[in-house]
Image (cartoon, rainbow, N blue to C red; front, side, top):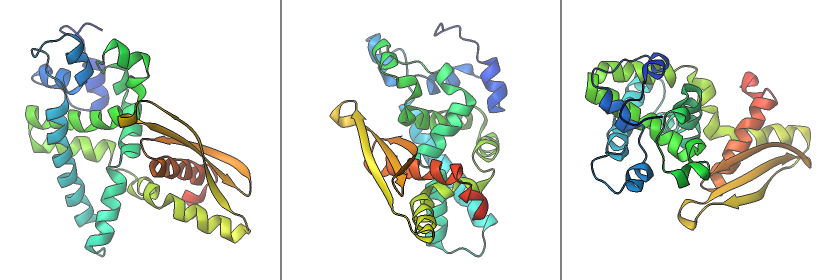
Length: 233
C-alpha cells in the first residue's frame, strides 16, 4: 500500500467518519517503526495522536458511564471504565475494523506479526480517535467511541471480572481452575505471554498479552464466553 496515495475510503466507511484532511488518518495508522525505517522525520507516526486519543477516550467513557449508571459509586465506575479501555477490548475492536490491513509498520515489524499485535491494535483505536478529534472535534469523536466501544457494555466489562466468574463457576462444579504458561516470545521489553486455562484438568481457551496476568484474563474471558457464562451473569 503506497504511503502517499493510499485510499482509505473503505476504512472510513467502516469507521463511520470521513476525514476532511486524510493526513490525520494516515498519521494515525503509521507506527514508529515505519518512520524509523526511512530514517526521516518527514513521516510522522501515531504516538502523539495516541496520547491525545487516550485522554479523549477516558473522558468519553467516563461521561457515558456516569450518565448510564447513576447508582454506581466511583470505584465501580472506575472498574467498568478500566475493562472498556483495556488492551484486549480495544485490540479486538481494531481487528473487527480492519486496522491491521492499513497500518504502516517496518518490514521487520511486519515479519514478526506486528500488524496483528494486540498492543499495536490497541494503540490504533486511540490514535484514530485522536485523529478524528483533530479533524472534526468532540462530537464525531463521541460517535466513534459510542458506535464501536460503548455498545453492549455489560458484555465488554465482563473481561475484568472473568477470572472471578470462572472461579465461582468451577467451585460450583467442584473443580479447580488453573492457568498454565505455555509460551513467551519477543524481546524483553515487549515480551508476549501465552497462557491456557484448565478447568478440572480440561484445557479450554488460550490468552496472549504482554503480562502473564493479562494473558490469564484473556484466556478466562474467552472461556466464560465459550461456556456461555456471560448469558448467566
